[in-house]
Image (cartoon, rainbow, N blue to C red; front, side):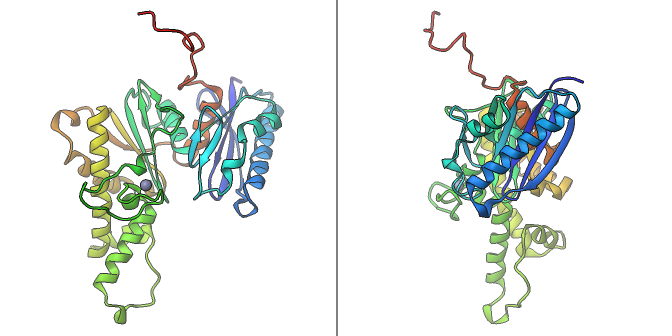
Length: 336
Ligand SMILES: [Zn+2]
């Protein structure tokens, strides 16, 4: 059997771990609860023991993992191997030197990155963006995450924070829009996350139904909004139209900036399938200049829930050589 690496995907409820082979197979996998309520230290211990379990499982099959990759929410400093900000998902995560902890636990090199960037690596290598040079990745779920690829590689930016597409402002320059999780107003995430879609729908419902007539039925979540919109409910349609207008604006901006071949849509809302993909495509193509539409396709993510751990394994092993520091170049002067 061939080369392999361990990938970990740390979510707010589950830690997924797998042994991933270079040809894109998940050879072994496991899941455990994320002990968020016990604090960041308990989460770090759970991550270490998940990594140890994976290395043991690989060893039992005669495999030696080359490295460990970790995908997590938040702003991840790729150089320091630390989560810089993840207040919403895992409070206190910033204080943990996760890369060192896991490296000491398993005795292997460890890399850590944002989960949407990990998903993008996996979709580039094995999924919906396979073979693409220029691509945009958007994850629509509880929040909105993203990543960009140029020359077939995921863009890191200065410290690794590139791709936080959920915080692209989409309101007009003269109005503010709803408050976002980041504290700003009018971000894409404040319109197009599942949380935002549900909030927009609830606000619209409240204006349609006077409080005295309000029924005690449960407030709709995002999937209830999609279901009601499919039945023609105007409040639900309105909320989705807001989300789609925001997606159209943000993605059209990115298309004009990057001229991508593919936009990959992932995250929990992708379970809405082809009608959702087509609605996003319409919203984008309406705002994109004709020359940019040619050769551009908008696809749903292909790897589903496995993309995070598969991309983390790619990252850990450096198989895609994404942003690996080039020792031959560092510290040298331009010689023309
Ligand atoms: Zn924001």
